Length: 167
Image 1 (cartoon, rainbow, N blue to C red):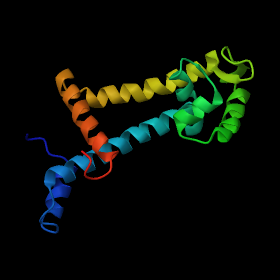
Image 2: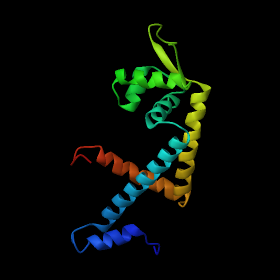
Image 3: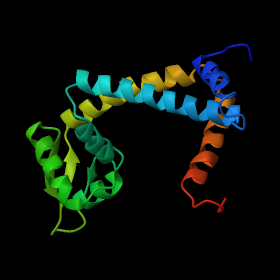
Image 4: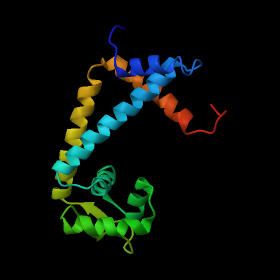
C-alpha cells in the first residue's frame, strides 16, 4: 500500500532504537490509539455543543440500550458503578427533564428510571454526531473490509480480556 501516515514515520524512527520491535504490532496499536483519541474528541465536542456532560450521556445511553426504562441497579451494572452512585445522576437528569422516576411494572416495591422525550432527543442528537463520524471514518473501507476488521478486533479484544496464556 502506498499511502503512508505519521505512524509509519513513528515506526521507522523506533526500529533502530528497538530492533526487535514488531512494526505491525506497533503500527496497529498506535493507530488504534489515535483512532480512539479522535473519536473521543469528536464525542467530547458533540457533548459540549449539546450541553451534555459525559456522565449524563452515559446514563442516557444505558437507559436507551434497555429500551428507555430500567431499574437504577441495572443502570449501575451497565455503567459498572455502585448502585448508590446512580442516585445523584438520576436526580440531575430529572432536573434537566431527561428522565423520570416511575413505579416498576414488575415489582411494586421498586422504582424504575425512564427516558423522557427530551432525554431521548438529547441522546439521539449526541449519538448522531458520533455515529456520523464513525461512519465517515470507517466508510473508507468496503463492507467486507469492515466485517474483517470487526472480526479481527473481536479476537484482539478477547485476548486482551483474558489472562495471559489462555487464548
